[in-house]
Image: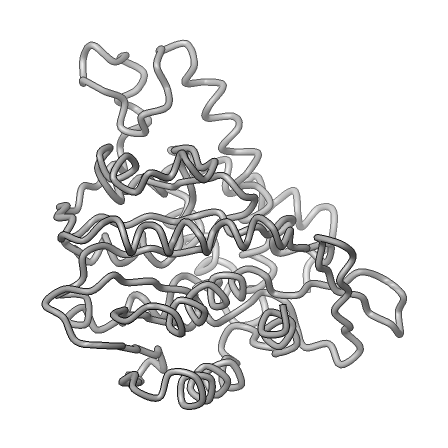
Length: 339
């Protein structure tokens, strides 16, 4: 718990990850002295521990959506962890997205004999770091695990129209023993790595945080511990390279309208009947609306309006409804005004 509190107290808004980079490097120096730590021009961090022909690999992102808050206090209430602004007497974000993922990776670095880890900058502003990542670093990995998903049960194999791994990877990981179920997700660093033709299976795991991007963000510590336990199990269980070619599913929405028989298994693996598609798409939009609004809010201070709209329509293209993205932005402006 002490390590997690330290991470929550480090402020690392997108573009200001310096203190988090410093903490990770010092942690490795003090706790993983045999690890090789490197940094690229984008200021991503790459860590290799041990020597082997192939490596398990875990990634996380160092930035958070929350601004610096000198009045933030970390509160631990039984199994729950959240932030409190003592001066304003209100809840404040702790950056559990994705400090929980960093916590998992740092713990694994202290316990595993062989491991690769990558920590990326700028995930919250469009996966800036992973877009510039050194792909050679991943040339000898068996698989890539990212812990950057809310709640405690999601095993993300498809995200933002990109297939991250094959169906068998879930069984090989034995994730069901830990209460995890296959579902779909949104853009994050492993999606970008796959788009850059990462040649092995990848997955994004729930790591116990709730209300991401909001001041009411909190963590269930037992679910975070369970995520760590699953990662340890995957590393010990999946010992061979899980080859998997990049497959884009950017147009899967229009395909689904024709039903399963015309195209084989549904690309997400969760919609079993044509008449379920509308319900699934509407649920996706409900989830995406908050992310679209938060992305717009983060970018409006540094980018032109038309650039933001174009970027967000591309980022959320998997919804197959650019008008919906525009609608979310327009409704947010109507409710909150412009800057």
